[in-house]
Image (cartoon, rainbow, N blue to C red; front, side, top):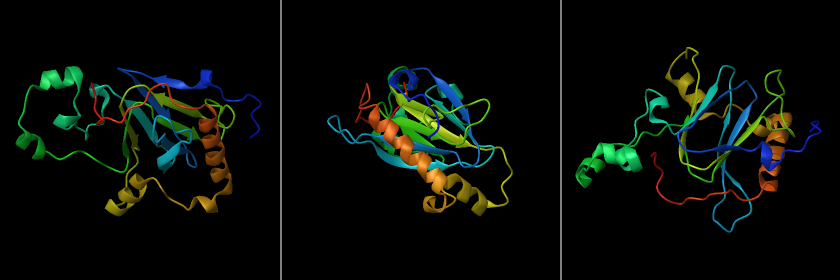
Length: 201
C-alpha cells in the first residue's frame, strides 16, 4: 500500500452507546465484519463481507429511531431501557414473533470490528490502505442500503447478498482486503468482548 502513515489505535473509531455512523460506498469497496472467537484469541475471523455497488451506503446504529424502516427488534433483542419500556411478555408471545434477518443486515456485538477498504477518493483518503475501521463497544445494527431501482427480486437478492464476483478474479480488491485484515490483527484484541445475546438498550 502506498500510504506512508501506518494505521494505529488512534485511527480506530470507537462505537459507543447512542451512536449512528454512515459511510457512503463505491463500487469495489469491501466491508468485512470481524470477530475474535474468544477472549484469549489473537486472530480475527471474518464473519461476513459485502462487495459494494455504486450508491451503497452503510449505516451503523444502536439508536432505535435510526433503524431502517423495515427492521424491528424482536422482544428478546431489547435490553435496558428498551426492555423496561416494552414491559413483560410471555414466552409463548416471544416465540410467536420472528426475528428480522436479512443478508444486508448485520447484528454486530460489542468487541466486533468493521473494516472498510477501497480506492482512495477526495473526501475519504485511506490510512495505510484502510478507509475506515470501527470497533464496537456496544451492540449495534449495521445496514447496507441503496436507493437504486432493482429490475426484479432476483436482482435485489443478488445485491443484498453482497457478493458479486469471485475475489480471486479481482486481485487488487483481494490485496486490499488481505492488507486490511493484517491491520486489524496488528491492532490486537478489542477493548470489550461479549458472548451474550445480541440486543439494543
